[in-house]
Length: 65
Length: 239
Image 1: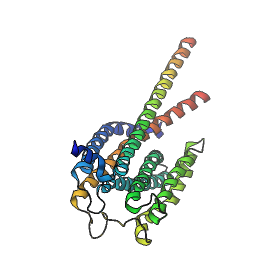
Image 2: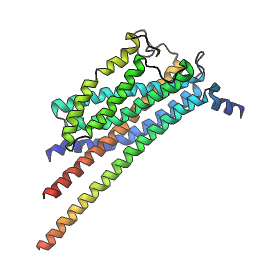
Image 3: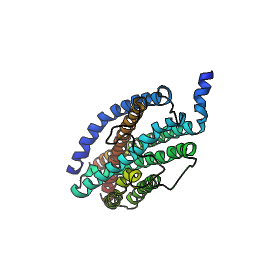
């Protein structure tokens, strides 16, 4: 356990080293997740619009017939 | 539909490339973090704080690399009206802004124990802060227009004018007497850093680069889908 606590202590600089790594990981993960979610949401909207468009044109076609 | 011919090919290729960049990023950053936190030695002067270098330096490199890529894409978009170039610039901006933010933040966390100050108005730090504001300005200007093409044009000009800042950042440590140390990796005499620290740094930098390409492709795909949504809605409105 001694080696773990000395590792976590980072020679007394834990308050500087760990936030550097922690915030870097956090920022990169948040940006990645935001990019993925926005892409998925837009793809869903597009599928809905395209699906809606085909349905609407089909309805129109039946009405015309 | 010929306008979408090129983006369609991009959509096919990027779909195949995304999983590869994702896997490379996970492997490189996993290895890089292990090397940076466990396998590399502490510095004889800076002690354990030297480990901050493994996130600080790659972030700063990527901040400059993303801006240079944006400037190249903006120029291609302005001159050849390449439809993907404007999207690449727009997709890069938030990634570059994040890297610049991380370079400033980790630099501050490194500066406090080693220099005794969170921040100094030295030429390197100030020019990187200007870079951060250029990213924010680009994002704001790009979104300020209803017509995406006009937003792309105005913000592309801003990026190209702001590119003058990139050589200023690079050479600030040589031109002015800065508290920030001069280059120790990319220099004529070869790297002034021991391989036990150089390797983790290079692996982390490679991981940051593949991360950038991964998120860039995701965001460009998002922009293309958004363009298709806009076109469909316009067609519905105008019948």
